[in-house]
Structure formats: structure tokens, C-alpha cells
Length: 89
Image (cartoon, rainbow, N blue to C red):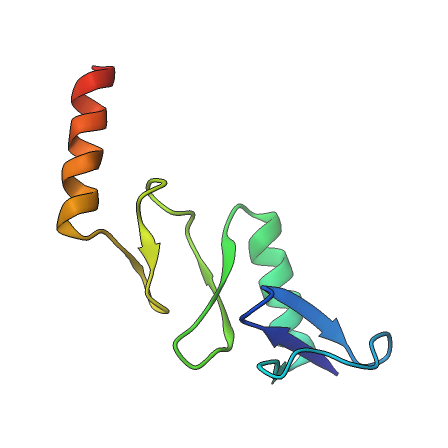
């Protein structure tokens, strides 16, 4: 059985590990395989709102934050990103 921990961002296999973090959630072998395949194709594994792992595209910038469903950018970060783009342009 496989488990995923939001707090560590890691996977735990019950045939290898004897303990795992309290926030670890069970995932199927198929889900585990899909997540690893997606990661090998350039996606990132992020915690969903329910704590279960989901595949996502990489963050659009270093200022974007993951909200459990999508990458978001608050107004201050958007302003900083714009200023960085102007400075580098």
C-alpha cells in the first residue's frame, strides 16, 4: 500500500516503511504509478485540498503559490513579477 504525506511531499510504501507522518493518506498503486509517470513527463506532484496528491504543471513563476487546486498569484506578488519583468527587459 502507498501513502502520500502533504507535510513531507513524500510517498511511503507499507512494504518498506514501518511508520509515516500522521497526515499521510492512502493512495492506490495505480494512482502512485500515474503520479510518477506524470512527474517523469515534467509535471509536479502537489497536495490537493483533501491532502491527496495531484499532478500539476510547474509553477508559472517563483512567486506563484499552490492553493491545493491551482497556482495563484496575489496582487503584491503580481506587482513584484511585473517589476522583475520590467527590470530584466
